[in-house]
Length: 232
Ligand code: SF4
Ligand code: F3S
Ligand code: FES
Image (cartoon, rainbow, N blue to C red):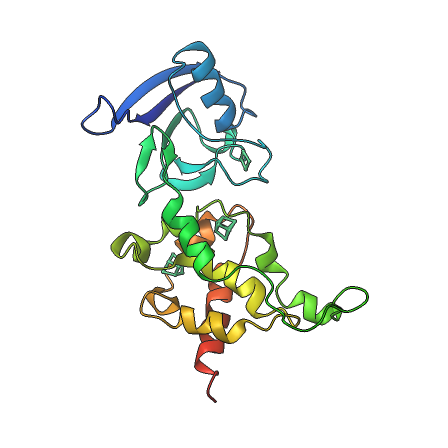
């Protein structure tokens, strides 16, 4: 079968603004959008630029706006989209070229929540132990691959780019609810800031966008409750 693939192109050195280009591509219904982009680059226009690495939904590098929803190009197939497919860069981030966005701000917010284990106690002889129940407490948030699909689908983020965003909150949740961690108070203080969790208006776009099926709004709610309960 053949699909009509529209791609929002932008070459900062020559273009004043992004513009749509249309390509006809021969595909198999089981092809993924990433396969289509690779075909266009190989057969029609070698200058097309996009990020990808693993091609199997693990690295998080090829999130983009596909038929108006944030999706991983390596996960979504033609048979899920139909014969007309549009692909644009993730919304709300500066475009570097074509489908490549500048992720520096996104990763800056990720770093701001201290996404690593903080524990000043002497290292035990073997590992720092925890019960299965304690491990289960943050299991969902360990699944995040930092693809940015959630944060860039969030209208609160579009309206105020300083909002730390759902991805950073999920990453903070991963450590806040880890029984071995001692940095929760610090992280909760950061997320209680005016650009922290309170910017979430429970719009739920983030949940729809997450390729890992993470219950992001639950994580945000748990972090908000922990902030409220701090001085209780
Ligand atoms: Fe991507 Fe989901 Fe992590 Fe957000 S929470 S960055 S959508 S994997
Ligand atoms: Fe945004 Fe998700 Fe909250 S879309 S407003 S972070 S529920
Ligand atoms: Fe790695 Fe799609 S290329 S997640």
